[in-house]
Length: 138
Image (cartoon, rainbow, N blue to C red):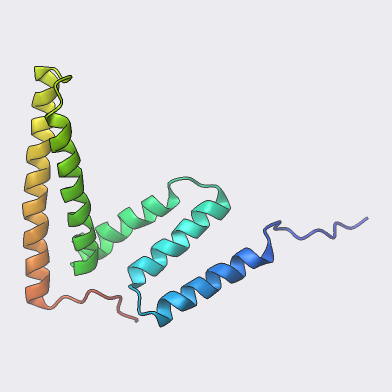
């Protein structure tokens, strides 16, 4: 007897929903980075592969931000680094850490501050050079 079940057992409605969401994001003028990340989140959920969306976001920041000097991914990275610095600084104030642990936390704070300066310089340079913040279609 031939197998008549479809190869994929996902509900058809799921794919239709994400297609409509993508079209809505495009019509709403949302960033291509946000659209790709949205699709990556959906793929992560449907494939059961935890961390896929975070991996894609990290790769977009590395390639389009730092390598190609697109402003948007660098601004996203700057926002995240600044938020981490706030959390690390708050942790530093907690009395339960030993002096050795506080030394490591101070080191992390210094690295985050240097990274913030570096990202701000890269963003300023990209803006001055007129580097596009959007994807360029070949």
